[in-house]
Amino acid sequence: MSGRLIAFEGGEGSGKSTQARLLAQRIDAVLTFEPGDTAVGRRIREVVLDPAHAEIDPRTEALLMAADRAQHVAQVVRPALQAGRHVVTDRYVGSSLVYQGLGRGLGVSPVEALSHFATGGLDADLVVLLELDGEEARRRLDRDLDRLEAAGDDFHERVRAGFAELARERDWVVIDGRGDIDEVAGRVWSAVGGRLDV
Image 1 (cartoon, rainbow, N blue to C red):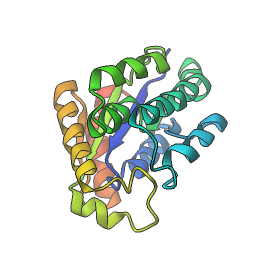
Image 2 (cartoon, one colour):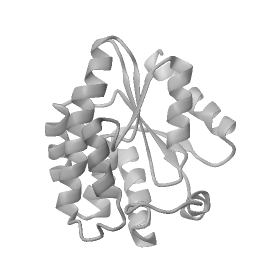
Image 3 (cartoon, rainbow, N blue to C red):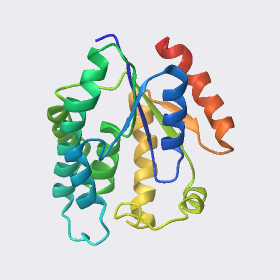
């Protein structure tokens, strides 16, 4: 496969969706996201993010995210890469490792094994983490919150700490998410442009 897979990760309100879109436009990549960028995935997203489903068990949540990812890779990501297109995804395996593995306490290893099965072993060529402190992130979330966004400050602090921990361990590109959109986009391009020759 000649296309490259670039995954944007980060906590709620970090700006990753905006920056993923801008990078995809800049390098003429396929822009996609998890969960929900397939017909099957949209149904899964409705269930897993619905605040009315507070009773979802962490293992159920992890399995639903993996099911979405399996369909996403099969239907969107792998075909684009095989056609020689670059793919930029707003969330990928890293989100499951952090949200379900560390945030929900399931452990990184079992969640990683589940994601490996779901993707058929397709790893991102580069992971970009948008970091933002909790107070600023909360200010940016000025809408009704979904089930994960509303999980509580303790959960989101575990998520932020988990992303930082994995970024150190796995050589992710870490970008300061503070500032206006263009400032952050400049940081992303400075960090990413040369690493993937895109």
